[in-house]
Amino acid sequence: MLRVVLAEDAVLLRAGLAELLTSGGHEVIAAVGDADALVRAVDEGGPDVVVTDVRMPPDFKDEGLRAVLALRERQPGLPVVVLSQYVATVYATQLLSGSREDSGGLGYLLKDRVGEVSEFLDALSRVAAGETVIDPEVVRMLLVQQAEAQTLRRLTAREREVLGLMAEGLNNQTIARRLCVTESSVVKHAGNIFMKLDLDPAEGNRRVLAVLAHLRGGLA
Image 1: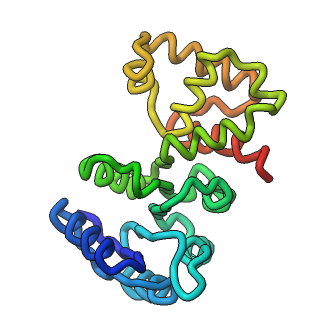
Image 2: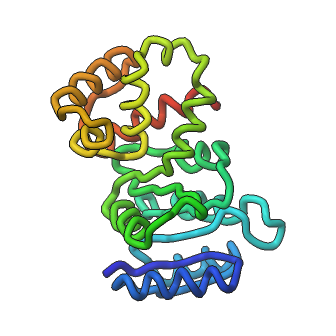
Image 3: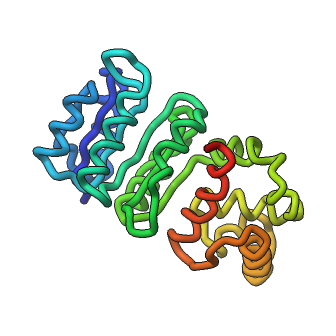
């Protein structure tokens, strides 16, 4: 069971998410509708994970995102899942810009693309456990914006596929199933990717953060 602080300005969606989390075995210790209330709820409740919208009152710009960034400055390692209505790579870049291997779990999901309740609950648990979970469409947009980068031109088409799946947070076994290849082939492709992009080939969440750091580098 996870203790969750939920921030969503739309009343019906907030109630629905709270019910979904509760039915999934978690405890919603606070469900709030604005960024100031989010900060107070986290400071007072000490949650295991925060789930928040990006755009919140009063200006409906990036108040929710700025709130969790400020919270993570004060509470390094605070796991956060950001739910967004739009593919906004600038928001994803802001969220990921300070990531390190020990900085706690992060998630950036698109509301309209979460197709299964179990998928969302699994992402929540993974983030609470310290992993990074990024919506595939956000990864695709990061890749598109980096498509002209000289470093990505070094990769083969298959290596770019593997790179995108790695950035989503998938392990070698899952990538192999997605691409219908052997796990040893994925390991070989991953090795080539890290060599060509001069990235740290460490396994686990550090690998995801290294890939994301490379992708967002072109957006700085």
